[in-house]
Image (cartoon, rainbow, N blue to C red; front, side, top):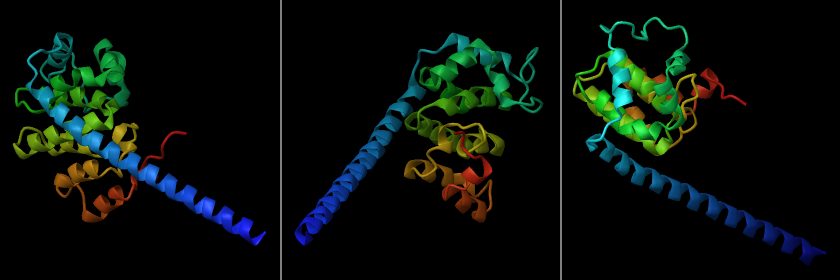
Length: 205
């Protein structure tokens, strides 16, 4: 009986060790894939082929356009998805990634246009969203975007975008911390880095 109990304990320990090894291997493989995809995403900015329907939409969202959707006044941000192009972006955001990066990194477009481009990108995979964060941080450093746009890209929000689920990822935390001190107190930054957004914006069941 004693031998049987010891054998069961050994089997459980071995099982736990195997599970731990598998989990760690999966985790580090995923982290590696994230870095590879960030390199891929950075190449999107150099793409010469563009989605004309996307840029037509962005032109229509300029502050001085005839009837733009003004982010300062809309009650619900999901109103952006009333357009066929933004519905396409939500379903397949990576197709428009290069175009959105061009808008973020160019002084040609105003804040309203940039917001219209950025919001649908919250449905990218985290591997691709990290690239949006890279370009946004760089654009902020160059004075191309303001603090409001920086906050929109790097911060968790109640709209259940991809970063609401990956706050623990080292690559996201690195990009979040880069200029977070210009937006938030150190106490709030640590709150977010510890997953505190779940207290602010509980995830949907």
